[in-house]
Image 1 (tube, chains in turn red, purple):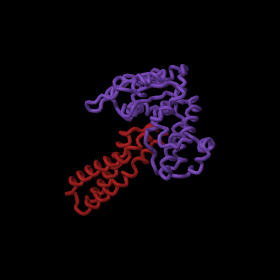
Image 2 (cartoon, each protein chain N blue to C red):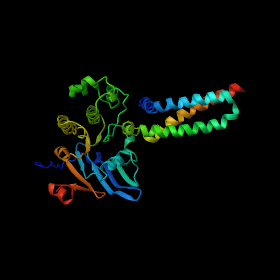
Image 3 (tube, chains in turn cyan, green):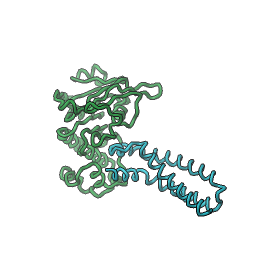
Amino acid sequence: MRLLRWRLRWEYAKDFLFYSMLITLLSYFIYSMTGIGALTALIWFKLITSAGGIFMHQNRKAQELAFYMNHGIGKKDLMVTAVIGDLLLWIVGIVVLVKSAI
Amino acid sequence: MDSWYRSSRKVGDMSDRIIVDSVFLRFRSHEVLKGVHLNVHPNQITGLIGRNGCSKSSFLKVITGQIEPQSKLIKYQGRKIDQLYKERALVNYLPQHVFHPKSLRNSRLLSLYGITAESFFTTYPFLQQYERTKFGEMSGGEKRLFEVLMILESASRFSILDEPFTHVMPKHVELIKERITALKTRKGIVLTDHQYDNVLAVADSLHLISDGTIRKVEEREDLIAFGYLR
């Protein structure tokens, strides 16, 4: 049952995570070109694009919400999972880049 | 309207019902539900009717947790429940629009609802051709019929259906009515639709939402008195 819920969360979030992965890769590229000086700007860039992305994703998927709720997963759960997955990936990548530069 | 609905006094096991009480819902300054209550009994079909914009759908969304009202009390088996959708296999909900992800195959959707493809397609052989089809690849009417039947056949204790007869051809409306009647032996069903004669044909109890309140309907004259029929 727990595995099923994770698969459904993935089903909901996958389009958003694909979009956010592009932003993440762009962030890594900008960081590798500019170095630590751009980190604050990159954090804001990531936060703003993620907020915009999740807002658009939520509107696009609004009609499907009842499907996920029929399987015990609410709107907040879906959103939080998608955003945490996105930000974790971004943070891990940036930390690896920062450490490798030191 | 030739036949009046067959109001039933049999309500099954009283402890197994869902009690929805004190629902107050306001959108900005507009109060749309003013203390609405409803008892949803197992093995019974509860019909909800009302004019356009009387907040039938909003009420169903409150029950299923899609809208958070200013106030509500939901109890099941004597236990207060905040969100019905979190209770495993208790309630599933059919909204009035197509709502399944387009990318999932129908066989996958059936298994998610705990329905074996074999039993589903034995009951509905004309849908067998769509077993491996992605949900989004069917026509609008086929999608609607497929999801109505999935929700009905699922293993949940109750099903809440918002306009199950809409966007479905007459032959399939008859099929849905037959299945609703047959499946009430294993679940309680709440049903609303503007095709009110179809609601009357299957409902064991009927309620009218009007002016933010809910009234039990016993006879046709009630609908005239409440301003639903002329």
